[in-house]
Length: 161
Image (cartoon, rainbow, N blue to C red; front, side, top):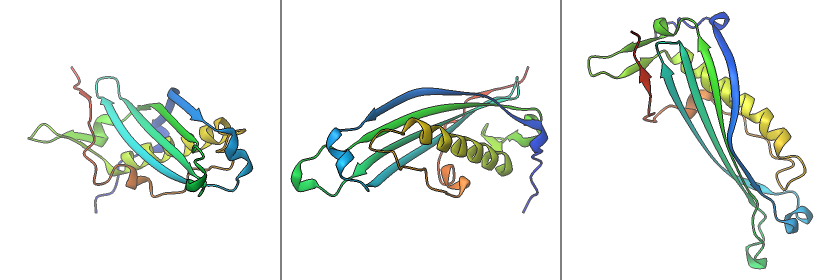
């Protein structure tokens, strides 16, 4: 196993933007706590090699499961798409381009980007969901590499001059 060249001192979270946000929280659900949730998470990354920048985008879609199918209660739905912008001072050391022109990214860097994006999103959702049917919703703890493993990410690459 190759040791990662990731140096946390050279990794900076520069900005966070909420790209899309929607919460549908029917009043009927406020009387039916606790609720269960279904969850869909998508993660993507884009790399700007010239400027040592990485953008990750995390999409979180949650839906309540009140267990009241027979009562025709509308379930609550929440969707957040959040973009995270990182400066990686040693990005060129952590990436390479294969003969097939495929970007190869150090797994330590991918893991750090996924971890920071996901945990920051957890805090954002905790505050944004307060006062809704998702009041008690917390993103579960997961293995960060589950966000990108077995996934063919669309990687946008701007090659250095």
